[in-house]
Length: 322
Image (cartoon, rainbow, N blue to C red; front, side, top):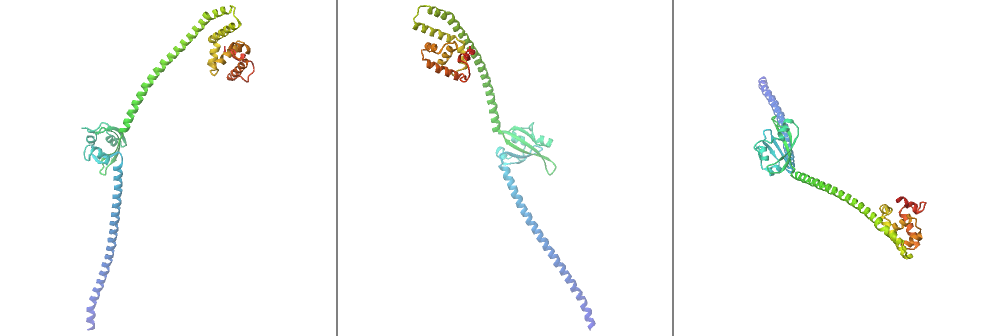
């Protein structure tokens, strides 16, 4: 009886052990599944965060691209517009999927100087200036880019340079106007030089005529009059008249006036008498001034000639001016 019991219980014990192992495996698998679920959840949370960050960055880029005061687009090799920023949308409308040369330039065929085509062919940045369908001047900078499928497109930066073109045109017109005015001024200057030379020639001719007329028509008669019987006062007046006439025709006075413009007319006359060797008393009598006044004029003449501290009498300094 006891043996039978042992034989019956042995299989039940083995079964219980198997069930315990199965439970342990299930628990372990459950723990692993929970760990994996937590990892998946964390990864999903991370992906969601990254998605939000990417969306935020995309919003920033979209805001920057839409805010720049120039055009930005992407054009495929077959001239179709893939992307436009707000600047181009406002200027030309929605051109996505349409031909760039038709929408932007109002042409029936591609531009002969297409920067997009040249950029893709040369694999470098290309530049050109074009007049858009809106009549404005644009500068286009095209940069080649390769798409994920291996095809090529071009990113274009399109800048409105209408104001600069107007300024350049105005500057060219101003330069042309200045050239014309400069040429006119040169002609006027040439004419003025001719007139000034003619004036100098006329002045020289007039001086020569006055000199000849005084010497030939006045001085001889004056000398004849002085031979007559004249009282001292009349003779003094005749001497003054002769002296004044000599002043008029004297090269010395012209040279003195030209070189020392700060001399007064009276000082010039005094200098002339001194150069002729007249004494202070004689000069005073000729000019009806006091000797003291003549001495003052002599001092002023020396000062203005810059010889007040030099040796030698005043006449020796005036004679070289003859």
